[in-house]
Image 1 (cartoon, rainbow over the protein chains, first blue to last red):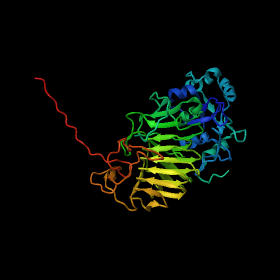
Image 2: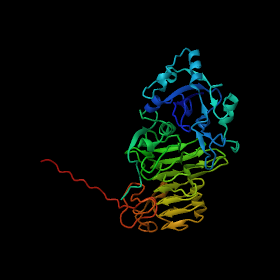
Image 3: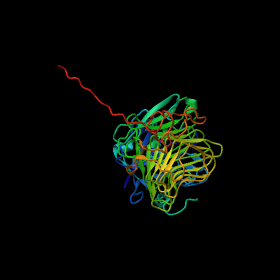
Image 4: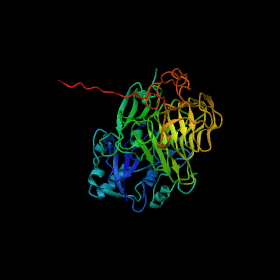
Length: 160
Length: 312
């Protein structure tokens, strides 16, 4: 399955959105709004057999909780210390884009007055494997990690 | 006199709707992250007007992090002409299949107005259509409807989940919670103010787990286990097992019938209320005379007769 990851540009305050934060996930053919096309970078990723539903894919939008929770607990949420837990560094995107012959003008990506979506409009699909960083651990997510993330809330109480 | 629906002193206005309709936003979380700013310093609130471009949206939002005050805050509301008609089946509607609460507010002074929401999930967690929690003052749900919420997993779903931290005040005004799997209004914390709300056909109508819960002009009927569970500070609310007469409860229309004697003219005037003064109902109709109990102020339907004069 192919998903569109909606990635943030940067804001200065610590707990607000940071460059590359995965703000939302939608099916690849989603037609984004005018502000979304200017204020975010949308990249298409192939998930293979993983993230088979919107309910699974949205787990990649979890915030960075102060107490290490990985998904929204059912009670009062703990302190949010970062807008998102998972992110795709733009530098990594640049390497992957060049490998597919796509040259990205990162100045235009970061300019929120421009409707510039190089990945979305070119239809370049990136591999999900080792694309996403876990900001809590500082490590890249493996496909096994992503499979586990998709299952949060389904089978076990979330305590870690 | 004041409407229950508040807006910031000055604000930026954006639009939300289905993909392909050229709205500013198609995803609530993108608007949320774009407007998660210091609104007080900017001296601008943020208002998102939603268009009912689709029968329902599978979407959700956690409003958290913006710096707000009573003048500059965030609001989600239907655009003009897109508001529901006081019952499910019209207006801006969210039906979520994701293991999350649809509208979760942990931020001061935020307002969610006139939205319909249904959670339909299979999860081991407890979720809700609308929630407010944390150490934040002044946030409110106004004219919102939680309906048909179901968790087919081991968890459950509430209509409204209201859990402010001790010493903080939140408000729920002119809202309806109907036919939800668990609590219509779950309250735990101080202080929750429930004004002119109606809770019907849930497992429990209004439930207090802890804290100080004020209920004024609230109506509960037909809830399976109890209409009222726990101790509330009540002002002119319906009694346990009350039987108001609605327009068409079988089709989810809980406007008051002309023949009702339980709710009509039995409420308290809240237009000068010390905590949240307002004078309108779920349909934005201004209360007149003695207030009614519940989310609807009964108004006599007046047929409109039009006369045409033909040119000779």
